[in-house]
Structures are given as C-alpha cells and as structure tokens.
Amino acid sequence: MRKIDTKTIRSAIERMCIEASYNIPEEVVRCYYNAAEIEESPLARGILGQIIENAEYSKMNNLPSCQDTGMVVVFLNIGREVHFTGSPLEDMVNEGVASGYEKGYLRKSVVAHPIDRVNTGSNTPAVIHYDFTDGDKVHISLMPKGFGSENMSALAMLKPSDGIEGVRRFVLNTVDAAGANACPPLFIGIGIGGTAEKAMLLSKKALMRSPGTRSENKTDAGLEADLIDLLNKTGIGAAGTGGTITVFDVFVESFPTHIAGLPVAVNICCHAMRHKEAVI
Amino acid sequence: MEKKLIYPWSREVIRALRSGDSVLITGTIYMARDAAHAKMTEDYRLTGKFPFDIKGQAIYYAGPAPAAPGKVIGPAGPTTSGRMDKFTPLLLDNGLYMMIGKGGRSMEVVDSMKKNGCAYLAATGGVAALLSECIKKQEIISYPELGPEALRKLYVEDFPAIVIIDCDGNNLYETGKQKYRKNI
Image (tube, rainbow over all chains, first blue to last red; front, side, top):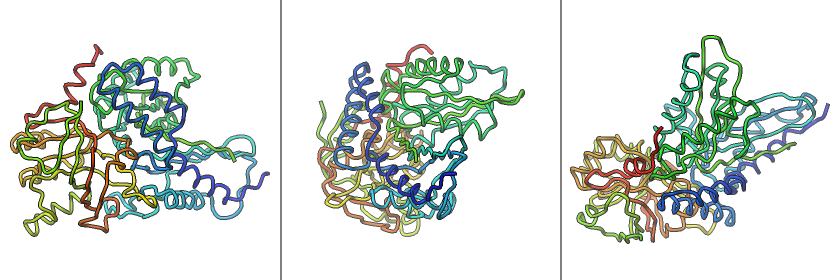
C-alpha cells in the first residue's frame, strides 16, 4: 500500500482550480487559431480574434478568462494500492476548491439549495466522481464547469430502432437549441448507452478528453467525425452570429445498454474548455 | 467598422442601431443579472419605483468575478440573457433603452422592444478578462448582499458589442445562421 495524506490532494485541487481558470490549455487555444483561419464569416473571425486575445490576456495577467469560473467537477481515479491518511478525502477536495477560489479571485457561483438559492460563499461543494484503477497513483481530472453551456445540455432516451440517425438528430437539435447561449464554438461531450445517469456521466467524461483525440471504438470515432461535419453546417458560428465553425470538437463515449434502450446524453462545453489533469 | 455609441444616447440613436452593427460603447451602463432583476421587480411591485431611474439607460447582464488587487472590477463577461426575459418587458415599458447580454430572447421581449423602440446587443461570451478592461469605474448601488449579483453602476470606455436584435425585430442570430447554414 502507498500512503497518501489527503492534504496532498487538497493542495493539488487548489492549484488546479486557479490554473484552469487562468490558463486555457494550449491545445484548446490552437483550436481557436485553426478556426480563425478557416472561418468564412468576417464577423465570426473577429469574435475568434477576441477569444484568442482574451485567452492570452488572462494567462499573461493571471486573471480568470471568464467571470463564470464554474461549479467544479472532479474525477478521481484512485489506484487500488492507495491508502489515504488524514482528513476525509471528500472534505479535502472541497477545502482545496474553497481555498483556490478565495486565493485566485474566482467567482463563487454555488448556491446551497436549488430553490432557496443562498450562496455557499466558497464555491463548494464540488461534484466529485470516484473511480478505481490498478496501481498506487491517484489521477485527478478537474473541470470548472460554466453554466451558460451546462444549461443547454440534454438527455434523450431513444428507441433502439432510432439508431445512429436518431442520435445525430438529437445532437443536432440540442446544439441548434443552444444557439448563442452556450458560447460557441463549442466542445460537445456525448454519452451513449448505459442508463440515464450513466449516459450523462459519460458525456461529462468525454469532455475531459483533449481536442483532436478520437475514440478507440470504430463506431464512436465515426460518429465523432460525422457530427463535427454535421454541426458545422448549422450556421450558428462563433457567438451565434453566423458562421462555418460552430464546434471545435465532438467526443463520444459509449457503454453497454439494455435491449430496450438507447440513452443519449449531450453535455455542452463553451469555447473555453478548461480542464486540468494531475497524477499524485 | 465599429460605430461609437456614447452616453447619454437618444431614442433616435437607439432606433438607428441595426441588427449586425458592431459598436463601441462609452458611458454609463448598469450591471444586473438574475437576482437583481428579481429584486428590482419586487421593489417596483411594492413601491412603484426601481432602485435607479431606468429611463434612457442600458443594462448589462453580468456578474463579475472578485477584483484582484489594483483592479477596478474582476472579469465580467455577459451572462445568458434569456433568464432575464420574464422581467424585461416591465423594464422596457418603463423606459429602459438597451440591454447587453448574450443568447436569444423570448417573443414577448422582442415584441416589447418593437413597441418601445429598444435594442438588444451582445458582448462576446467568455472574453471576460478583456471586457473588464473596458470598465473604468464601478459602484454597487443596490443589493450588496447579492455579492456578484449586486446591482452596479459602471462607466465603460469603448466596450465592444454587436447589435443582435434591433427595434424592428431584425435578429442577427436568425439571419447570420441562415446565411451560413448548409443542407442538413
């Protein structure tokens, strides 16, 4: 067994919250530059220029790139040989979030109850997903998820006979309905299969992938390529003002499902796909 | 080329804004989002007044991040305007000229804009660090308890925005999309 003091996790989370908000990943910024070269609409090209300038400005000046510094989603992939010591893991993740949001001048956007809506003042709790793997390491994936895009996410329980055409149609309708609200150009996470909640979880996990990475599953990889092409024909464009680049990338994750079902979840991320990875 | 839009603006200037125009705004604008809209509406219902004279003004839908030391305000980009739709016709009927946000508006809002001669503009969502540099002054004028959702009065210089819906109801989100949409 390898002992890990949960304080280590706390400091990693604190640092990741700040870095994710200040520094848009290089591979994401590269998507902006590529899009600016091929976008046909002059207005949308100007907007992509603003997006590039903002990413560089926020990184250089240690500022959050967006005022919506999100609700924090954390995936913890824990090696089976890890033994945690110290305070409970969940508490330390949340302390890391609270401390990162205070020190980094990040906006605290979490309310304690969805109906009563009193701000918790710490941006906690985070949404934490636990997974187990071999080995003695802890892999952390963290994403501060903004709600302009989260609000436009959707789930459909399709019929098996709807097939791939049904999936395409649902994804298209979801992105069409999102329009300018979700801050396009977008990154789209799609989960197919499992149960309702499994599909949603897969769609969020899909957004943890890096731009340009294709699924190892042939059907899913084919669907990714097809959907990128399809969604870029919607005409929505950067900031919804019309254009030929509506999505930067589409990531599909799948899971076995029931003979009676075809769950499809679409989780939308704005142009600022801010995720951070760390291995402890 | 951007048009300069300088406060105070007349009704004629607002009516002359056309869907698709790029503008640079200089002057006073007010910042309010979900909770401030709910409170303003409640104040109006109870007292017949809003916390500031909204005649001729512009509201920017945003809630900033905290200001780092030495900064006027933290990053402050637009939030999704549709959430303010249910509060908006009352404000337009009472003389609000202009709104700045991002995303689509309801039919009720567009009808009220046409009736009153108002404009709806968008700033680019997600470029908050850049936009905050255009905000030169800010003060909380009501509801400080709402934190990032407090009602603020701002002074902005060359704040970039695009006219999405003009006073005739022309909508760039529709026309822009149609222009670039391919057979699907």
